[in-house]
Length: 370
Image 1: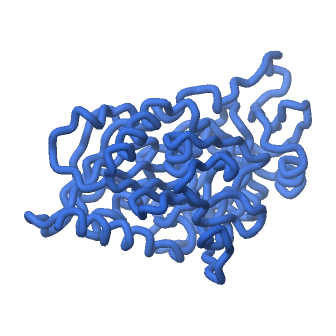
Image 2 (image 1 turned 60 degrees about the vertical axis):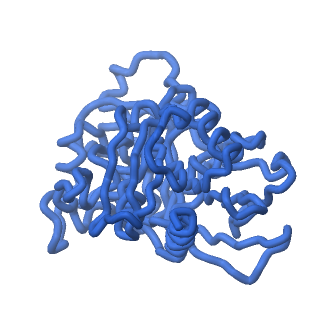
């Protein structure tokens, strides 16, 4: 009998699937009904054990793991599985999607990721909502569990684990002398962000999280800072480079972790949410001049930290707020040159309501190029 053991001693017993190994991490939940291949390959989940609230996971299998013409994943959000474990009520062994090439359990086994099925995920989610996210373990044999604490992944330099190690340049199709170029800080960048930029005709220079921006001597019309895992305050090198970009008036756009890092770069603050936002159904309401507008979009999200709206300096304001808990979902500067959102406009998985943000960014890039 396989067990999930939380840090407070609570135990959920179930059946093993995937790899029959022990693992530990921060236990979080995702409310999405679909999109498990994208979620499990999202680097922002690094160090976490992911519970799906939707009861049946795996019924449409897993798509082909192949790379596109630029050399990164065509269907997934990275080239690896980043969670440390998976929790579901019912894991489907069979699959029926025309594009699937393998089963969900086999995929986890291939990457040596343990799963536990047959537990009451509703009760687990309720506990995490009341208590907050908790550290936990998936163990194959309770008797073999040694005493000792689980290392908190938020105290680790997770961004360094998922970032690229050398700069890589991606040329869009039909690139020419009019093609704008951006520096994209890879803090665990989802591949659909790269796809979204490239299909809009942007040349992307993807750089490590600690890349020295001041040393770059190539064309640069804007800066992008990606999503990523862990506590944003540990990502000091990216914060310093983002501050340098803003001080030098470089057009700057951030997504998810990039939103938190922008707040820290301008002297603001961030804090850890009780249980975070992870799923495909989070409503976000736009603000203008400190007041809510009638514009609401449904967004895909995956984060455990948020921006403190009381610490934004002069000239900066809240751009978007979460419709459920009023937390900050975006910030921007009055100049219009620096802006970031907490949600994922690239979706993957989830609704594409926020796709227009890429269009707005690219429009500004082309104006810079002109």
